[in-house]
Length: 199
Image (cartoon, rainbow, N blue to C red):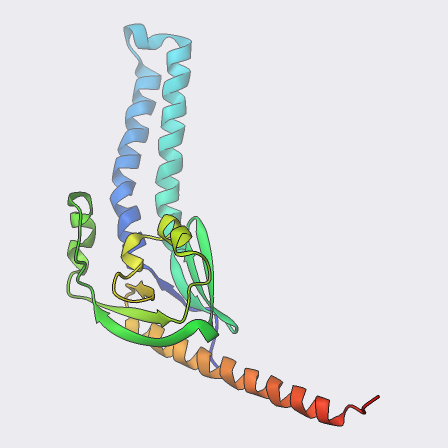
């Protein structure tokens, strides 16, 4: 029996949060320093309150950058594949998964701002899921998921994780178990209909 508690961390989100962590900490320190040691015109109570608010915001962003990677993962559940990001959770029924296959991470269009984000992953292998359909509108997915998770050339999703083979095995095992349970239910329903007396 396969377990359903293994989290496969999404590396794109991990790096994205790690890039934001130091700037958020520096912003916190800068605003806090100005709020405590504000010279001249910055010593006004209203200005100090605004600086303290900026420091609190920076601290929240720093804490969020620590928590965010733990909320960004792919996990096999008994009835569906869960794709979790800090702001969004997507449940994909195993009936929608056509196949899972390895593909190289070679993004075709990378903006200047994303170059440092993707550079460490170039040449790695991702796991691509071919889907028969998206569980929600593609427009919503483009708003809520990182664009590198949405392929241009096929309908599906692609996951950059530390061990794509382990994720592929988990998906296949859970799909097989789900299909077995579905067949058992179908046989049970057919038997019930045969045994039920006609009115």
